[in-house]
Image 1 (tube, helix red, strand yellow):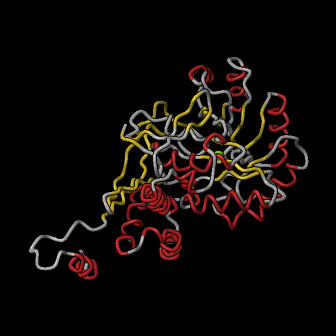
Image 2 (cartoon, rainbow, N blue to C red):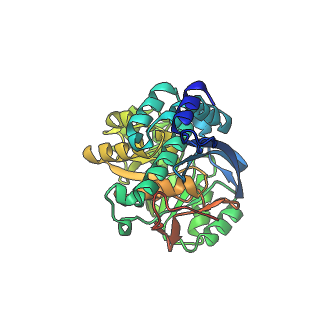
Image 3 (cartoon, rainbow, N blue to C red):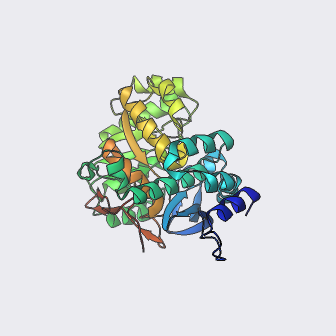
Length: 362
Ligand code: MG
């Protein structure tokens, strides 16, 4: 305990009682190792587990849970996220959590980068605030839980045989999201199509390197019943994406090109919509801002997630009544989720009714 917190704790100890001071606010940071049900391959990486950062913020007998999934694409890892949270521990312990917007603005000012760490703090505070107010976070944001969209279930890059098996396993999901962007795009889509006629959404994860290739692939995907394409070209190729957009019919959604609210205006002519993720934005508050800005600019909105537990996915799902598309399946890809929150019934997100995030222990 630093000197200021010691003095705060001492100040609230019952005078003359001789008893120890009541437990003040506390913060716990923990790296969660989440085991994947299938080895997960995209254009960026291939792995059997993912580490995320879990933050527990306790005060007044209420514990708020937060989580951030570090994104390798932005040079983040779980240890860096943990250090980022530790760097603002004193601020968080001394702050009034009901002033969460002010607190998060200060966290954003003090911590460069480390969006997953910031997201873990923001979500823990929001979960705490919702519980303190006794309302679910969707109610705090003025949303109707019946308005949640369908979520896609993601099929990572794999051999045609395993792709078919994963597609069969996703029988309960009315829409699938398929990862492409390597040399195997056509066999992957054909493998999925040999099993199902469902609408598909496709994510190229910046995998195509020139605009002509992107136009060719997207026009082929449209014929294969694909609804939209996510991030066909590298994030910085915004002008080329604008060129592509004028030559294809299906919507193009920005993911890697769109991390935060300030990115959105420059994407307006090149993309039809944006994929918002709490791990990119630094939490629910910035994600909410992004959704509102995109809507104001007439763009489609999507909520996505990284591989993570039900903490982070439920936080995103609380905002999902706002968006056109959801890809919130990160908790469904793991085998050791420590929490239970949002559920999926025939593809529709079902929000828990409890206060805050509404989480329970799995
Ligand atoms: Mg994506």
